[in-house]
Image 1 (tube, rainbow, N blue to C red):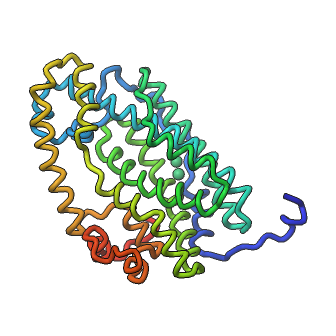
Image 2 (cartoon, helix red, strand yellow):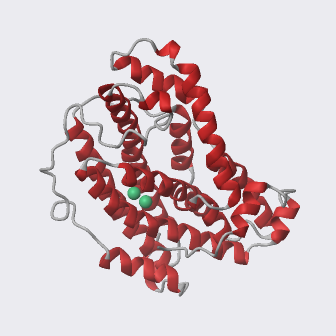
Image 3 (cartoon, protein in one colour):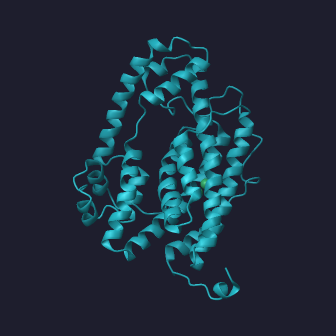
Length: 330
Ligand SMILES: [Fe+2]
Ligand SMILES: [Fe+2]
């Protein structure tokens, strides 16, 4: 980069992207002043209600002793918080790289503002985890592989599509779920503040990709959608199954409840019933995940694209298309 290249930066003039930068200031929060870090996190505190965890809604899990349920919850929430804290650092790296790669003035500014938010989010999760004062379960190889792939790319569209569009849309559902179920007031507060920032980040991803789609040829749009649609559909239809059950059973045993063989079949059966009900809600359009709303908002679900991909009849996509037009930013 040379001074000459910075002398007269182009600005796309996109009003939505400009407003994201303003909101980064007007909706800012102070990690020390706006969060009461003296709020305690108990040694055996559940931190989220028992329903939040995978299999937490099954009658068999609900019948377990409270201390067992609390342990399972705390381990599960700790694992997610560990993924989130490292995910924030990944996002910070991506934004720093984007700030140096993107050429338009407003894009650079949005990336820099987001980098600042991600630094604060990382710090907030880190501080909360320190207050939990325990060794957390490791992050899973699939998540780590996805983060590694993202960190290795230098292509701005790929970075934005992965981070702001895909990961942050997917994370919105995780944040909202955690925030709704959080029982520890400190966790609830930081999740509320972080989610507010994340909706701006996701907004930038949606607006950037939507603008790119408008300029792209039909073939490019089809190629881009093909690259992402399978992953989006996998993510929104993924439900707790046998693999997750093993993880939950391990946590139950850690809590001193050793007879997990006798409860495993019932838990799986009951969860499958819950999964079916969730799937029905998805197909009816009553519960449209943010990822599908984002896919729709960038134009990925346009009839010509879905037709080219042979996906016009996909029941989940049809349900997403029936829903009301959702605003990009809440
Ligand atoms: Fe973040
Ligand atoms: Fe973010």
